[in-house]
Image (cartoon, rainbow, N blue to C red; front, side, top):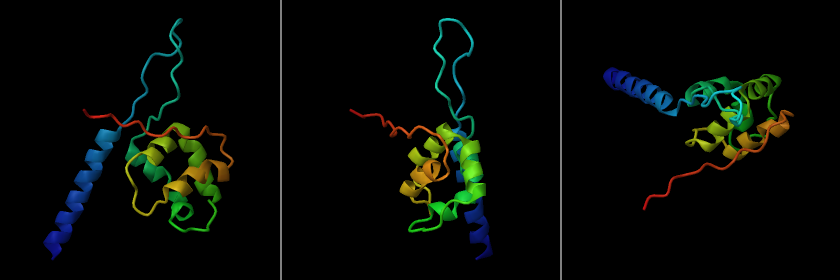
Length: 125
C-alpha cells in the first residue's frame, strides 16, 4: 500500500513536470526595432506556475460557488495578467475549477482585461 502511494506521487510529479515543460510560453519577437509590429502581450509563465499563482482564487472558481473573489485573489488575477489567465482558461480542464467562474474573475476583480479569445485547434485531415 505504501509503495503504491509513493508510486502515485512520483507519477503525479512526473506529469506536472512534463506538463510544465510542454506548456511553457516565451515571448517572441524583438521589441523596439523600426518597421516591426509590436507583438501582443504574451504570458511568460508556465501553465503550472500560472495555476499556482491563482491558488487564492480557488474558492471563487469552485463549481457552484457563491463566494466572491477575495482581495488576495483579485491581486493575483491582476498580477498574473490577461495573457496568462487566458492560457489557463483555454487550457486543459482543471479539476475543481468552473471555467465560467474563472472567466468572470477579471470583471469581478475590476481588472481591465480584454476577453479571452477562444483556443484555436489544428484541423487534422
